[in-house]
Amino acid sequence: MLNTLHNIGTNYGDQDVPERMLAAIDMGTNSLHMVIVKVDTTLPTFSIIDREKETVRLGDCEPNGNLKTENMARAIATLKRFQVIAQTFQVEQFITVATSAVREAPNGREFLKQVADELSVDVSLISGQEEARRIYLGVLSAMEFNNQPHIIIDIGGGSTELILGDGMEPRYLSSTKLGAVRQTKEFISSDPINKNEFLYLQAYIRVMLERSIDELNQKLKPAEMPRLIGTSGTIETLVMLKIREKSSVIPSPLTGCELTLTEIKDLVNRLRRMSLAERLILPGMSDKRAEIILAGALILQEAMTLLDVPVLTLCERSLREGVIVDWMLTHGLIDNRLRYQSSIRERSTLKIARKYKVNLSYGEKVASFAMSLFDQTQGILHNWGHEERELLWSAAILHNCGLHINHAAHHKHSYYLIRNGELLGYSETEIEAIANIARYHRKSTPKKKHENYQILPKKYRRVVDQLSPMLRLAVALDRRQIGAINAIKCEVLPAMGEFLLYVVPTNSDDDCTLEIWDVDYKKEAFENEFGLKLKGILVR
Image (tube, rainbow, N blue to C red):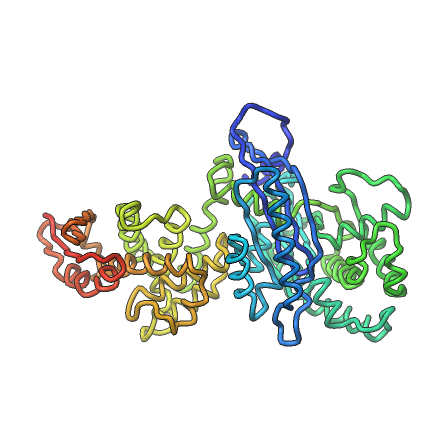
C-alpha cells in the first residue's frame, strides 16, 4: 500500500549495495528545480544528495501566449548548469518534466525540441492530473498518512493542484489554472495593490477554486476530517515569514511546520498593504518570490477557507521527489504492496476504454497479437524496450474507441479521444504517441503533412512508424472478432527478404481465410517500413 512510501528517502548511510544516481528536474512556471538522489535498489530507498533552483519565469509569456526568447535561453542555460552539477555526482540519468507554462504555450513543444537538440535531454510534458499524481507520490515519500484522509495543495507559478488521498490510491486529482506568477501578471498592476484589484483577484480565485473543491468534498466520506498538507515555494515562503518573525532559528527540515488560516489571513492583509520594496526586506523573503507572494498567499487563503480546514502542515517534498518515486515504481524497485501504482498505465487505459464503451475482449485480443509481434521481432526488426511496448499495448486496447463518436473515420476520432482522455502514468508526448499509433491502425500511413504526427519528437515519430504497422497486422489477425486465431509465430528470412507469419487457428476446422486475407490486405505498411515481403501461413 502507498503509505509505506514514507520510508522512501530515509538515509541509511553508506552500504555495500547497488546504487543508482539520478537527477529529477522540474521545469515549472516560476522556477527550474533539480534534486539529485542516490537510489538504493535493494531496500528500496532514495537519499537526497543535492538540490538546485533557478528562477527563470517561463510563465512570463508574450501577449500571444508564446514563451519569451530570453526566458527560454535562461532555461537552457540553467539546464546546462544543472547538467554540469549532476556530472560531478556521476548521475546516470536525468528525468525531466515540464508543467503548465510549457504545456499551454503555443511554442512549448518547439522549445522542448530545442532542449532535446542542444542538450540531449528528453523532457516529459505532463498533464495537470499527472502532475498532481506525482506530487502525491512525492508527499507520500516524506510523510505517513496512517490510512487517514489528507488533502494536498501545491501552489505553483501557473497552476494549483489539489489531491485527496489516504496513502492508498488517490481519491481525487485536480489541476486548476491558478498560480502565483499567472495571477500576478494578469491581475496586479499597482504597487501596493489597490483595493479594487485585490477584491477582483480574490473573487476570481474563489470562483476558479470552487468547482474542484466541491468535487473533492464529494469524495470525502461522512464525518471524515482530512488533514491539509501544503507544498511548493509559495507555502514554504509563508512558513518562513511566520518563523522569522518570531525567531532567527530555522527548523531543519521545515516539513511538519504548521500554518493556521488565521495566520495566513494576517499575512495576506499585511502583504497587500506593502510595496514590492517593503516586501523585499522581509526576513525570509527572496527577491523573485517577493514579486508574486501576494497572489500565491491569496490562493492559499481562499482554498483553506473553501475547504474549511483551519491548519496546514508543510511538506518540502513534492513533484521532483514524486518523479523519482514514479521512476522507481515503473522500474519495479518498490515493494509488491505498491503493485497497483506501477500498473497505473494499465488501469488508466482500461478506465478510458470503459468510458468509451470499447469491446475489451476484442481489444485485449488485438493487444495480445500486437505484443506477440513486438516481442518476437525485438532485436531483429526493432530495438524498442518496455516503455515503448506499453505505448503499443495502450494503443491496441484503445484503437477502436473512436467508434464511440462515429464509425466513419473512427481512427481519427480514436486519436482525438486518446489525446484528450487524461491517461495517467504517461507524459504528454507518450500520450501523443499512443494516439498516433491508434490513429494509423487503418487507412493512411503517417505523412509529413499530418500535424498530429509532425508535432512528435524524432524518436517518437520512429516509434509510430514502426509500431503502427504492427497494430495494423494485429487488428487484421482478429478480423471477425471471434478469436479465430489462437497464436502466431514470426520468422524473419533476411537472405530472402521475407517475413513469415504463421497463424495457428483456435478451431482446427477453421481455415481463417478472412483473417489471412486481411493480413495480406494490410501488410503494405509493415513491408514498406521493414523492407520485407510478408507471407501469412496457416498452421493446423
